[in-house]
Amino acid sequence: MDPIIDLHTHAQDVQNEPTVRPYVRGLAAFMAWPGPIWAWELLNFHPKLAARARGPLSTWTAFESQMRLSRATPKRLVSAMKKAGVARAVIHPVEPLSCAEEALAIARDNPSLIPFAAADPRDAHAAEKLDKLLAAGAKGVKCHPILQQTAPEDSAWRPLLEVAQARGVPVLFHAGAFQYHLFPRPSHQYGCPRRFETLLKAFPKADIVLGHMGLHESDDAIALAQRFNNVILETSFQHHSIIRRAFNAVGAERLAFGSDWPATDIASALRQVRNALSDDANLEKVLWQNAQRLLGLQN
Image (cartoon, rainbow, N blue to C red; front, side, top):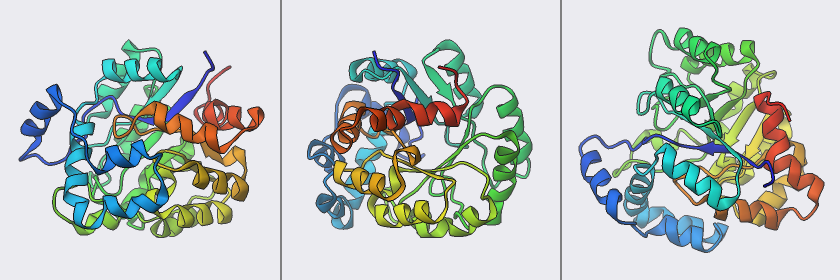
């Protein structure tokens, strides 16, 4: 097996509608729920179809997303990894929706899983908590402006980035506007890549990964990576043509494979990277070498 590392997965439920959460979990326990994401995945995340998963279909897309995320468990993740031929995966908690301490415990019981830390930026003790999690073995930091309801330009992120930069660990931000909740909220726009510029200027020495390569706003994410050489673009939910465009813009050293399982299928995400890059040396960089370097892992 190739030592492929998936830089973006979840082993915990981060489904975020408390009033419907028990019902979503109940449905997801025994059935799949095809919807716009399923269709988009089936058609290789084609960019021309992306807009159709938004607009009038946004609520359906949000519900399907919650169904998928509610199925996150370590056992299911490890099974999906084996099926796709992935050796290791980074698991991302999203405080306060999923517990960072639990992510560390999951990784201790599953050697193929690599834990990231997280802290709620609205918590006055977030930086202290984050530092303890990193000292306990977390290999990086997950930040989610939309689900954590804190815009990228908000100063609340700075203490967390200072801790990550001091520890020399990468920070993966969700990037890309997306309606996670059943009804629109202003925070759904907090993922827009253009909003990260202030943060990137303030932390030029921190390795900052833009999750999903900006999702439906990949051009803006690629433009940021061209301007800031500490930006790494993660490939989940991107068509191979966009991954190829990113490769041409910033090179293989600035791309890293991720799936965002269970929000999408690992094998589907992996296929897009392989279709984008035919050269073995570049594929190795994107599929595992860049992640290995970011995470400080040995060969």
